[in-house]
Length: 138
Image (cartoon, rainbow, N blue to C red; front, side):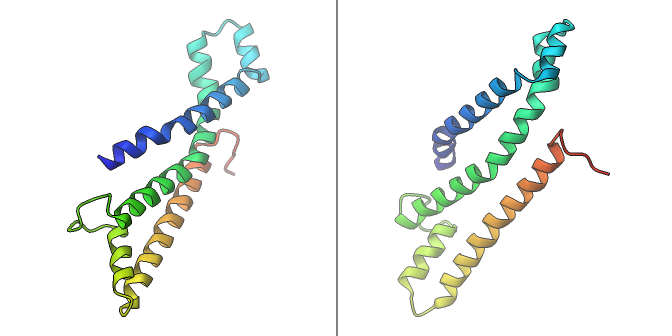
């Protein structure tokens, strides 16, 4: 339920970005040339404009996903997330705060957060590079 609420309130920023990319892409020369040649609007959108808009979307996605993970962990830490018996990063952080005599709990939570969020950013950088139509691999 929390994931769906996070998605529900997180998508408007992405919609604005995609709309801006489509509005920018419609003024490119190759889009004008395709329109002058009589190519249908659907073909122009899917073949020319969508790949360029996808690059901007994939650039923004790691920040949305890491923000959602941090939000869910914060809610778990505050006690508003999953039940306290369910394992989560927020619950681990709360236990580390309650048990200061066991510093490995805090280190484990910090290292897990850091590695998870860094790996997500690195993975999405690779995905973005793979889908970038302007990038050539030689």
